[in-house]
Length: 182
Image 1 (tube, rainbow, N blue to C red):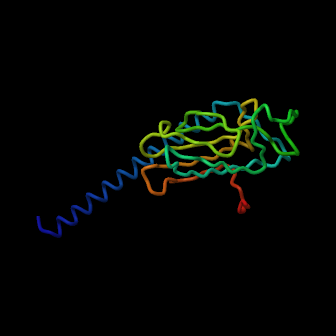
Image 2: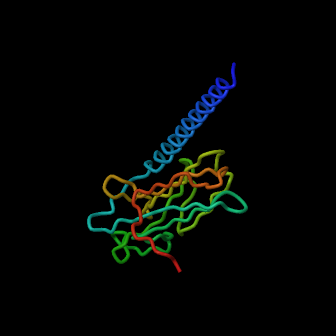
Image 3: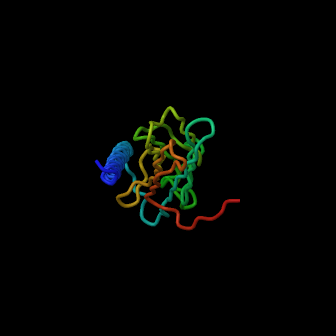
């Protein structure tokens, strides 16, 4: 085999390896998405109601210096609180804004409830490679808040073996006007 054919063969082989790696990565992301989606849909749903400001949610992920990852949940039009701190109203609203808590899912498994904006995900909850952390907004009766046919949920796909750990971010209800927090 001459040098030119060897280089072409080697390049073709590397291209095939990269393609197979990409396909396997996509399959893994799809499998994780299906798992989280299935778990979230196992709860009853509750529409937010006409005229209610739609809660918005976005997630950010940061590598924890000691273990795992930290997730910051940014919300708008929603009062995130613990059930014992909730204002008991028939429509679940305080000042016209829905209230409730959140559910945290890691790779499709509900791991905990969330009453604040930050949560630590320990390494022991994560797998090697691509992982999904999803957060759904829920009433204090554990129904998934929905707007139309959509659960109000944010998710982040991450891989801690990468320098930039966030691979993809998704939200059903994005926050339009972000501003700097002081």
